[in-house]
Image (tube, rainbow, N blue to C red):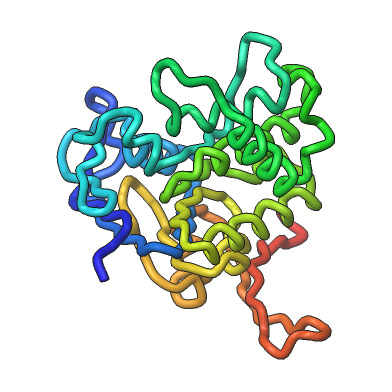
Length: 266
């Protein structure tokens, strides 16, 4: 089966500053890929290149065999949805209107959102636990609430590939768990999800593959149980960690956890 998303020998730089080079990655339909790495390693830039908003210096990115840079904007929006960490809307739209903006990819120039589009938007708001805020001005929400609304907007877009840039970065613990559950739900429905994160434990909590970025390249790609190792975490983040198997009550399987090694001198 061909990959849903294929990155081949990708390189990008800002002027003389090399961001990443010779990146190769394949992600299948119904798979989540968790990209791990420290600040500045190129995770967000890579997501922007996959979305087509930044242009590679060299290499190719394909979705279903189509070069993302050859797709017209509306066709690209119908295939790829993305949620970045920061997003500000200047006008005081209410939450439901913001989520309905995700339906734009399914409308032509002269259409307005239909009753069906409104229903889809409300369903996605309910999915992220934010339906009760549908009439509230978006710019009056907390950072965590806005993040959940933007995720609702992206899945209302009904793309085939969802890109999430640090999707839990502004969320409390409860909503972090909610987003991880939503990611697993999307994958179970056949969507392809690529998410960046700083937290190694996320790789163990979403079912898929992991890719670890360091110094502009992938140092390991594969099942998180084999690539999210103490050695690779030390390389990627420069800290000592321990990875252990933990048994949870009511579950037959063990789950891996990654914890930092904090010594008294630290």
